[in-house]
Length: 331
Image 1 (cartoon, helix red, strand yellow):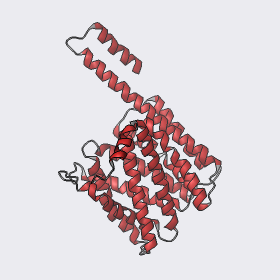
Image 2 (cartoon, rainbow, N blue to C red):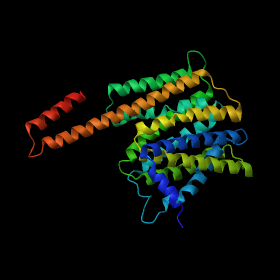
Image 3 (cartoon, helix red, strand yellow):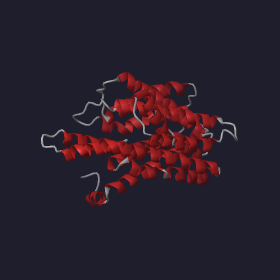
Image 4 (tube, rainbow, N blue to C red):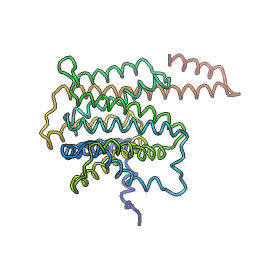
């Protein structure tokens, strides 16, 4: 018996890929907010480090069917040390994030985590030597300017929660750079497997300093955290498979709206207007960065095609002129 009924498959296939991508990105946004609410529900009674350990342990169990597919060897990696570095960065980002959830409004947490892709772009420039256009530098400046609006360091003292969020975004951005390097040689399943397995012992070491056995209710909520986290990761991956980042990223902004509503409904939080303004500006920077990056990739593809045509035995002066025009257009 098929896992998904035929009519559902037919209906899914009838939806255009861009719309499917937006749908999955919004599901991931809901998953993040649901996970945050679940963590906040128990984080005052059991330490966030303990929650992180159980989140990853249960999460690995949920991913076992993917890791043990016949004919695959997900343990084969070309760079175990980088896998370990990525896991360490993930742990630091997650532990700081979980702790910040107990100190700051949900909307502020989400607004500042939007900066992680911007930090990853800066890291790729500094560490990998990637080229960035002036337009993308402008997008980065807009994004980081939005983060300053959220934090307002000129008006209020930086709180512990804000500093933890900055640490979380910075280490997650660094992890994204490492993932970019790993993706050159390792499969996505291998990267996910090592991230999951290596984070468990590190989280356990941190959790042992604050260890307490969870109640059945707390264990149930932590299982929800793992489920929501897994749904989020799979939905993001599927969203980017269905459509380009510039199509699906705007839907990720719904995360800020969902977080604001959830914070108000469950915890009576009313985020300051600066959080909404700054979060919007940060997200605008993220979207513009992705948009300009796509434009650069498209230009490179057109230049490569024009170069192939110019090198063809049947090329003409007209083709050579097209190549020159393309290069001139790129700058």
